[in-house]
Amino acid sequence: MTYAVRYYTKTGNTKRLAEAMARELGVEALPISAPVEEKVDLLFLGNSYYAFNIDPEVKEFIKSLDKEKVGQIVNFGSAAMLNSTYKKVKAEADKVGVPMMEKEFHCKGEFKGIHKGRPNAEDVQAAAAFAKAIKEAQEA
Image 1 (cartoon, rainbow, N blue to C red):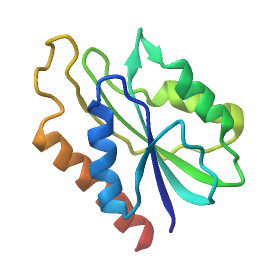
Image 2: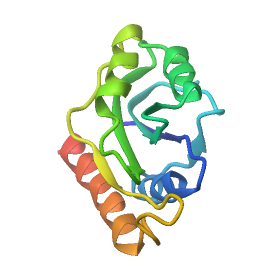
Image 3: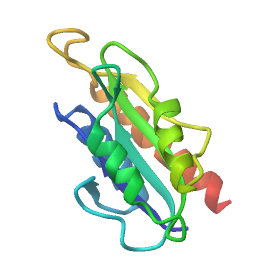
């Protein structure tokens, strides 16, 4: 199995989660400005809600994905107000024919004092454990 981790963040919260996941997967966490050029079985894609939607840059990144190179997207992220971005990411992924794994990781994120200190060390550990569990299940 091959893995890649890409993330989009404005506050650094999602980057922290991405880096923890990437360590477990044995890859480098890169921002979405780094295209996925290699063939990967699972692309862990970190994002969040901004103004009640995923950022236009995330949409453009997903639009750039080659369905022949990316086997499946694994969604993850953090947000202060809303929860999962899964449906928004899936709608974009469906447009380019890249399937989404149903399992995802989400935790609270700090924004303007809401959920101060989140994601915390426990959240980062949970993100790493999530990536490890996905890897173990795929390689079993």
